[in-house]
Image 1 (tube, one colour):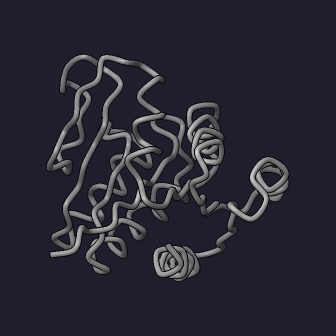
Image 2 (image 1 turned 90 degrees about the vertical axis):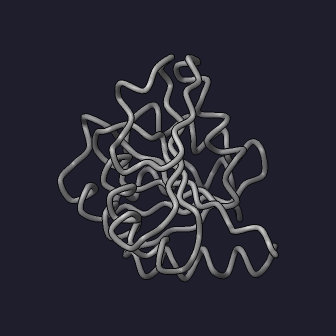
Length: 166
């Protein structure tokens, strides 16, 4: 039996924009429909919570890697909660455990660090947002590893291409 692809979705917690939360929910649904495993930051806020809820709504498997040393902030929609007690250092675990990384919206410094860590490790990153300045910046850092997506459908198509090329 082949190993399921792990799709890491990164994004803002408490500061997530409403449109990013809505997009994350739909992305989670699509990840589950494709039969991929969802990995997120696991917390019960913003993009992390919404993407997990979307995947669970479609019967998908969800993994959440939380920065705290306990499960107090773990989303109810996470099947496998991994407690690290590592704070932001857990961002490296998130990206290294993912086959493809999707940054949903522009989440701030935590999401930016995950994108940068993914690029540094040679992982492909899909930027699912509408901010030209973030796309330009990360394309400068990552070149052909950076892929832009306007919609969830675009992101899923890009994930398929990247997985098939691996």
